Length: 438
Ligand code: BES
Ligand code: MN
Ligand code: ZN
Image 1 (cartoon, rainbow, N blue to C red):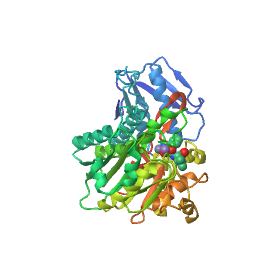
Image 2 (tube, rainbow, N blue to C red):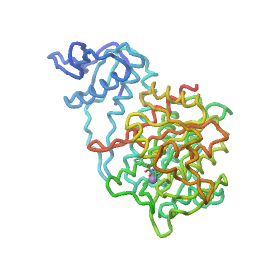
Image 3 (cartoon, rainbow, N blue to C red):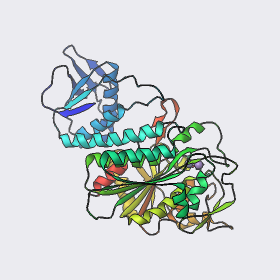
Image 4 (tube, helix red, strand yellow):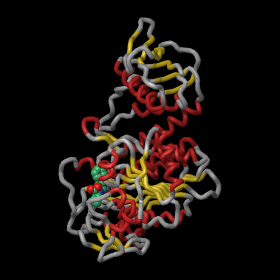
């Protein structure tokens, strides 16, 4: 799909006339190939513009329109919001073994004024989201840890990035007993992927860590069968940070960014971890695995120790970590927790700007005490209460040497039901955060 700025309407373009007198999303065709699109008397703001753009694109496709000419409304970021929303709406799920029929007729959108650079940024973010969505929607028999490593290597080739993939033996030599305890019951080889983009001299990098559990069966603490297919989405943190890397590299931002992806499959097997097993993490801290389904934190803790070698300015991990965050916040906000309030504030602000919002949960010592174990430095679960917070408390024990924040995206990375599919979140939030640091 093409987006451009031009004051003139070209041949074959349908002129859109925004009309406050029509109910929201109401649409009227006129003989001279213009269409009136209802805005109602809704307050015009970034959120309503995004909704409007999505329904406009959907209607354009429904009425087989190929090109639109849009007046640029006086709302901050109008061109960027519409471009990103429409480009993201263009995403189609890749069906395994099939070529996608081109269902979308809308091919081009022209704005009467604005900046091409705004369009280009929005398209880079949409491109990062499309990568995240493609990987998320892919079944786990195809999107394995090895596949994610190959995807990272592909990005490295395309954009000239540095890529390193650690194998099981490398991780074993580094003492990553926690990460390897999750992958050991699976036939799929675990990987630890690092990908670096350097465009700001010797400045300390922003480091993003993404949970890459390509399928989470729960392991020996097996999950119930209903809805278990959705655990192919348990690598959406990984997909998200790969998407951010694509967006940043496409925009050629003057920043240093490293992404790190610990990726494994969590399966039950005769050689899988068992409840009560005790493992030693790379940090030297020991962990009693009370529930093999609390596996995300077990792979993240070793990745969070590993990233110290990059001498990070800041570390942000993102993970489909807890079902509890869906209970707490639903599917609207992701959860944010941090050991640095300024960082949490910056992420919340970036989320508002990017229309990809986050809500903060607390990280007090009282919660941390719930991780006490009689057999190791900590257990990997804290009991029924405050599950999102105790998961973050677990991670915070491995992040004491740098500024750190954690985004729990279990509620926001994909939608269930009839329109099941990955959302591409938190690519907009994290990319906006990086742009805001410049
Ligand atoms: N990947 C899941 C979290 C999850 C569950 C995401 C449902 C989205 C929907 C994670 O590995 C997990 O299983 N967490 C457990 C933790 C519990 C055992 C302490 C959970 O949330 O039930
Ligand atoms: Mn799990
Ligand atoms: Zn999981």
